[in-house]
Amino acid sequence: MACAKWAATAGRDNEMIQYALKCSDGHRFESWFQSSGAFENLRAAGHLACSVCGSGDVEKAIMSPRVKAGESDEPSPGPLGKPATEVEASLTQLRRHIEANTEDVGKTFASEARAIHDGTAPARAIRGEARLEEARKLIEDGVAVTPLPFIPTRRTN
Image (cartoon, rainbow, N blue to C red; front, side):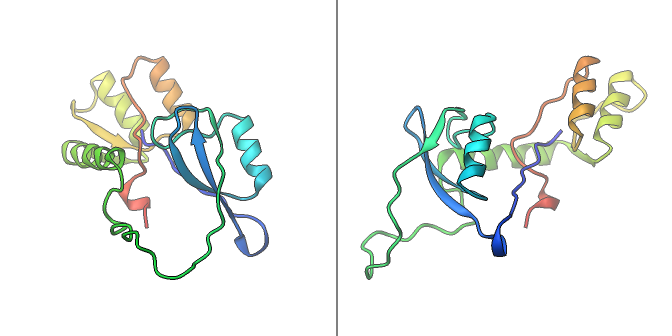
């Protein structure tokens, strides 16, 4: 089962707001939201988590305006295709390992996992996509599944 990452756009011309955020452990990160209200609604519903440690205790951090005042002495960030943190590097390594050692069964994941569990399909490591209700039913029936912390390659840009 794969976790589906999603983003929503709204407002005039799909405008979004970027906030600097921090968790209770002091980790700082940034994220985009439809509006200030959307941020507050997601926070109140418990749908925000620290991108470093996963803590759900997230709040807005003080953010300075971005004003270009000339050339910066700071080195420019590395290429976007390379992991920026150890966490990103670890997730990239995990993803490569999973993709190399499993079969992608796509949207037939739930039925294929059940067939393997029931012994009607050959035992093998698989990955794919399942709706939340399908995943719950598999878990209730004792089928060993776990969500993956990334989206399928075919769904990334």
